[in-house]
Amino acid sequence: MKNWVILPICIMLAACATTPQAPRADHLFNDQLFSAPSQRISVDDVFAVSPAMKQYLSSAETVHQMRTNGMQQGLFDALYSKSQLKLDYNSESTRNAAQTFAARSGNCLSLVIMTAAFAKELGLPVSYQRILMDQAWSRNDDLYFASGHVNLILGKKASAIRTPFDHSRLMTIDFLPPEDTDGQRRLEIDEHTIVAMYMNNRAAEALALHQLDDAYWWVREAIRQDAGFLASYNTLGVVYRRHGNLQDAEHTFRLVSEREPDNTVVMFNLIGVLNDLGKSAESKNLAAKLAQLQPEAPFQAFNLGMAAMRAGDFKTAKLQFSREIARDPYYHEFQYWLGIACLRLGETDQAAKHLSIAMENSTTRGDHDLYAAKLDRIKSYRSPLLVH
Image 1: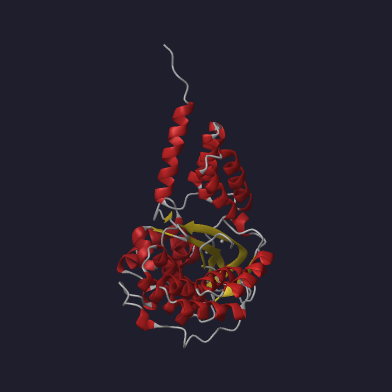
Image 2: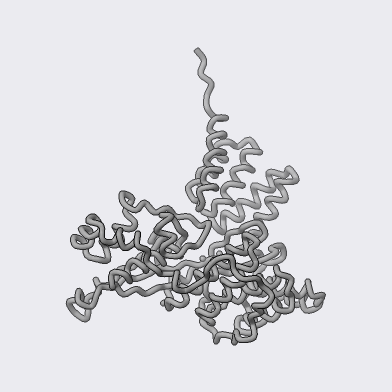
């Protein structure tokens, strides 16, 4: 789960650091504007355990691990040992527990949900934390996404706790390296917030596929699950704007802005709607406030770099991509385009270095294969000629 002069749309997937009073949503929805969803949207599906999952839990190897190492560690080993389930991290889509298990693949939130579903099936207490760290930004065409990070904590069954001070009864499972989260503040969140995050992610992914009807119903359910998760209201506003319902979009963005007046994501989206509605004076005033709060937007230097690439100014492109990498060193797309800029400048060693980093940090199979193919081509340029 990471502005504004040049980004056409921003969607916030992460929860807010504070918990302001939730707006009333009873007059927020306009169901009659949208067709029925193309798929089932139900909270009951999020943590549902499939027969295949139950079979995996009862397999001889899984049972042996839990008996030998304890239920918490045994479950973790059964799910995340490279020799067993062989799960693959993939950021392309958010899946529920059963879908993640079936695909052996999922993003961070999907893996949290699947792990929690297994734990609850075993009777282990589960709680969730949001890590209060800088948002990570990504993009899909003209949609920009700010995402946060959550992890989960597994407790022991009451019968397995020996004393009231048995701290070993808690086990934190995190899908980021410890060095990425050490020292970061943590905020415990309820399971209905995790469900709202899931629904909101599904809405954002439907938006990226131009499936506006599905996006509406997903985000509607997100708000119903947790009316205090304000990121969902921002997503709903984006849905309304894309659907051409500008007054509904303005109303929705203003609800969030009233509770979080310095929320730059919502501020940017509201500026766009005000422009669409011809409210240019208010839009300019809000844009001036935004420029003070956030002088340089995520992806601003990247977009300048892409413009330089199109103009054939590879030196400027390299400079702009390097600025983005200083902000987010491991975002694969920044590394890839810096590698391409270096390649155009004849710096093949540097190009290979940055493409290798892009490939190592890619979050989808398609991106990985693209970067690997480009890297192989560069290596072929560098291969010495053999003279017999």
